[in-house]
Image 1: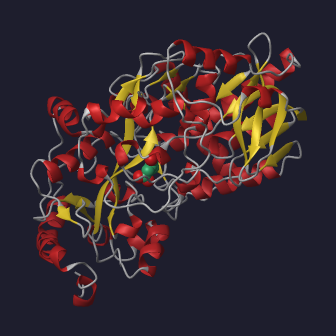
Image 2 (image 1 turned 90 degrees about the horizontal axis):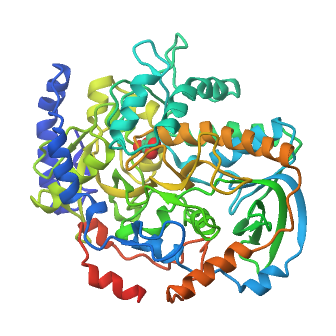
Length: 568
Ligand code: MEZ
């Protein structure tokens, strides 16, 4: 129970609702102890709720691409604008830039996937350059909280994991990729342990595993609520210990370079914040640039790091690479809705994995807490919008309670501090004690489900170009389940690094690095009369002060005319 002083930290209008949450808590805890849970939705209801309430289905939220290899495919309008944009500089200028560096494998992106690829390529005997837009490690990997899914316990199996991934993705996933993901999971887990990653364990040394949304078994392995940070720590240490890996921070790829036979042979890198571009020539290239959360699809807040601006998608698309599964974006059900200075910040699904329930303003449950992510998101929006059962924030946003204090009652005192050291300390500094105070949450843009199509060896349609991580599509289909991103970046990051190394060794140096693909793309824009003033990749989001609530927080649907007007 909150003290009266704690209660006073919430706006007056929220307090009656908080009292109802507290009043119903003991009964809800008792029900959990009896093994009772809120009923899971039928498949038919899931589909209906998604159709009606998930932002992916909002009118006007997407539009068809007018140019490029995936012309006709629907993507979020914010992304379409970037995919149909002009380069940051005129092509004639770009063409004159001379090669400053030569390397066997160029890895673009210094998050988990890029670093794993660099390690694999270096260990296969290649010289590697990691070009990274921010500092090495600054990425969504670092910010991942809840954990990594791996089927390594007796009651589980890669087959069970395979079925869960397909079910979560509405059976739209590339099954060959999923098979690799789940079968190589246990190997990757061992690899991380060997590098010194500190997973949560019982005193016997057995790894703790938890449920995530949409999983039939407990298979989420975590390091407190800072799993990605801990993973990035060991990957960075490993990479730095290899002499053949060089890292170039604050250098963002603004175009790929291709030779006369259409092979990837390097990239143009812009020094962030400086008017300086350099060319790097490579025998093969790995694209691992991450996702697009900072595009704030449909004006939703985001849990993503500052550099998540879709740069990799932009340069790959211009170079003729087809994209897939970008119709659907992932909104994490529990971003912060209050305090509003933290809007969009991730509140890990692990809280729900340990029993925290989602409650409306009457203190009632309205959905099983561990439905797949897209379903839980739709349920929250439905509860706030359709039934007006959300709790209003001072800026007239809406949210539902995540009843975190239940965790202490279910698992004993000290659990929150131990299992969630990151968020516990962060909120404690702001006078919010998660052991006694629920958090108000609302969906936040979290993950780019799709991207560049890849093959099982992380190859793309362009010889010499490999890709891994959030920039790719196929593994998760239309909807990723929690914990499969940290697994994917390692499994396919390692594949990408090994494949790139093999390609470099077998194919040797490519031809002269050029930009004919870009010229072809610009002609395509011209021929289809697509006029745009947008230049990309944008490298960083361009905001000044953000005004809350963003439209997404109210779940507003926009109508088509509003949006199409912006592109004509
Ligand atoms: O995979 C994720 O996105 C994840 C584990 C997020 C979280 O809730 O912690």
